[in-house]
Image (cartoon, rainbow, N blue to C red; front, side):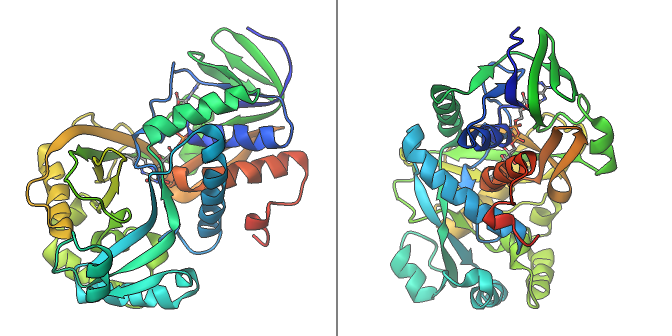
Length: 380
Ligand SMILES: Cc1cc2nc3c(=O)[nH]c(=O)nc-3n(C[C@H](O)[C@H](O)[C@H](O)COP(=O)(O)OP(=O)(O)OC[C@H]3O[C@@H](n4cnc5c(N)ncnc54)[C@H](O)[C@@H]3O)c2cc1C
């Protein structure tokens, strides 16, 4: 094991760890990233790769998403990462959903978004179900294929001088040193980004912050033979994403409780993203447990497919892949906590890491180096 001192040691090579490594690199630091796995296999490669801005909680989270989207856009060409889709079509199946979208469009976060009525939506997306009432069209989002993008980002960081120690479990962290199964790594600054491991490092912080785990069902569908103009979401998403809260959300919620109680019971909302080969990633459901069971009951997948049919008008979707993903979940959307001198624990506890991690990495680095908070985090 190397005893060479680094400026920054990062535990965890998921997007949160990589984002910190990038922020450190940009500050001219010598960076090492340590992960127990041979390659990324956690939430960061199981997700939609959907860098979502519209719908994020108003304030810091929304600004983090805007900033992270910009970093993705900058880094993607350098790292050879393809951006497969841009923007978002949040479609409405119910008048109550159109009301929520209209309120959002009229508010500050809706400034660059467009409210589409039924005819306008048909012009933009003629392949969708003709019964849809309209949509909010957001220009902000971008979408990468995470199972390609995370290894590409890792390889690019490596090419820029970041050291990666894989198949190396971190057993303990103290100021100035990360203790691994094969020896100590010394570093002035240390960030621990352990994703779903809530018990190995700083379990008392995880417990105090009420962190548990959330399991999600995901599907890949065969190319339906049409190209959607943007990632799609629907009415169910309006009640899950905090950014849509407003005076008329309650009416939609009540209607959904009456009409789609089973979907709500499994915390299902629809996200549909499309790959360059035409295949679709469709999800997702949410269930909460510190030790999620490993199973993927088909009944829950079928509920997701029901909503997919109602939105896309695709009657016969062919499922070609199924998987579950797990992310940490808690009352904070995300947190970074000083756990010892020069040591920070960074966790995204809301399933928004692909959308916000780059901004969080910049905040941690500014804090370490005694700089002003980055512009997106000022005034907080
Ligand atoms: C199905 C699904 C869909 C999602 N969709 C989206 C989306 O569309 N948009 C979005 O913004 N977010 C989405 N998310 C959330 C996002 O994927 C997560 O917030 C993000 O990936 C978390 O990144 P991470 O680096 O914390 O975790 P991970 O990717 O899980 O990485 C953690 C890493 O830490 C390593 N590690 C842990 N403990 C140790 C240790 N002691 N020693 C060494 N290594 C260790 C693990 O091996 C792992 O590689 C989704 C999540 C899931 C599961």
